[in-house]
Length: 411
Image 1 (cartoon, rainbow, N blue to C red):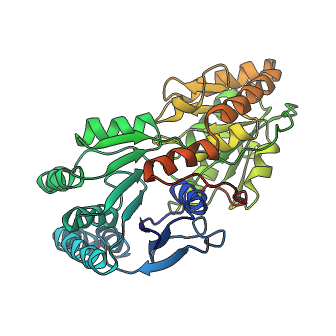
Image 2 (image 1 turned 90 degrees about the vertical axis):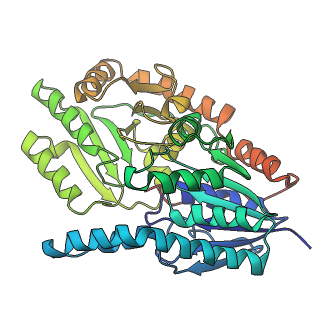
Image 3 (image 1 turned 180 degrees about the horizontal axis):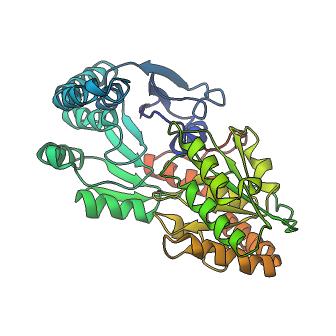
């Protein structure tokens, strides 16, 4: 009988972590896989394609600290916000204990050989961490804990609890980080002594794309949920700096759904106040994201926090240069001045100066895009990623598998 692998997913916004898992699952055909998904999860990316025949879907609706936290801030009554937040803090530990017991009971009944955790960040989803703690307590389960974004420091009110959970989790299995930056954050901020392996994300290889047109105006694409963390305001402020200097030949298309209520209104109002509304557009959700990359000259990423953004990989595969903030694993993807630009600071004027240079020499984007595609082929293909996971799980490589088709954006 084939080995059973339980995959635990907890998340509330569909994103890169779901995309990575969806691409990996078809390559684990020699395993029986049970996919445990939180009922509150947005599965538009994870379940965009039919699941492989060896994967069964099981949804769990257990209460989590995250769901209690969302409940605490969901009230429209200002009077009730503080009591709800206090209650959510008081309930945090009891809810975590219940999650631990539920997962322990699941492992006792189903006896999986492998536990695969798909965690957005660390600590990330408490269901993910309680699943690992329960697997450690149960014993006999190989644990692979995949972390997609930078770890954060333990919260002071829960420092002792966080320290205890980390010490339990690090006793067995290994952590997989999607970049060296994520791996470093696990070791430096959480003091984890467990084995941490970096496996870069990858994409299916594609034929060499056509170069960008680089006409006037220069067309830039920015992909990601509309929220403070993705920091789309940065790009609009840079546009305004150029506009005040008489340069209006830059356009930006923002692709992504609103993740913070009212943030899109803030962006449109800011653009209106600065006089650059005619240089930006919002598309919302776009299914054919690959086509969007090819319709633009280059890509922008102005995030405050990233682990290893899939939109940068998608841009590289499309032969497009990327201008990005130097955060997380981004410098591991982009070679400054060769495949794009890494912004040194947090001042929009730096981006505006780069745009002025490109308006003078737009052919630079074509050269950078060709180098970006070459770097993608050399280092960031799905085959390379899958090979390392198969080695980690001790699975033989598949002789033949249908290519993974993706037609939905990373939002």
